[in-house]
Length: 173
Picture 1 (cartoon, rainbow, N blue to C red):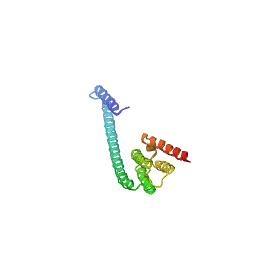
Picture 2 (spheres, helix red, strand yellow):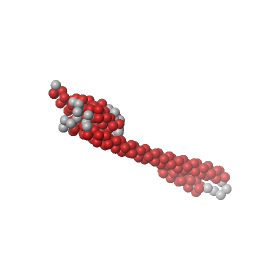
Picture 3 (cartoon, rainbow, N blue to C red):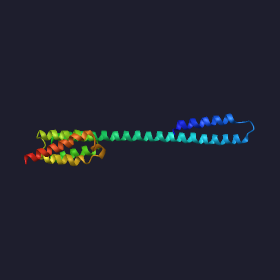
């Protein structure tokens, strides 16, 4: 029963009791007093429920704000490291670049990073990484992402690219 409906029901019941009130009927006055106390208690309970709901909504909004700030900071770290990595895309820097992207816990950031790494590799600018090595690196770092992020659409194409890189690597053998 919704709180508004419950309150409406109680107010209607109180009105009915008042109409039945007789001047000297002590029993009816006691009923009304009891009912009035119950009504006050119910109103306070509804107010507490509403306050609790508002508090929870506020906490959720604050949590989302903190998460958003963390994702932004992580994205900044990845972008800063990308500048270093693009200057010299070695195997160790590629591993660190993918690790930072995975630790951001954002499928979008990881997807962009993986796309950059694959693009550089396909242009044969990544030193010391075979297609199989890159596929293994992408796959292992993809698993660092939270489960919810691994299921997002941004990751789907990476999984396809990993398989494509593995097929190309096997075809060369």
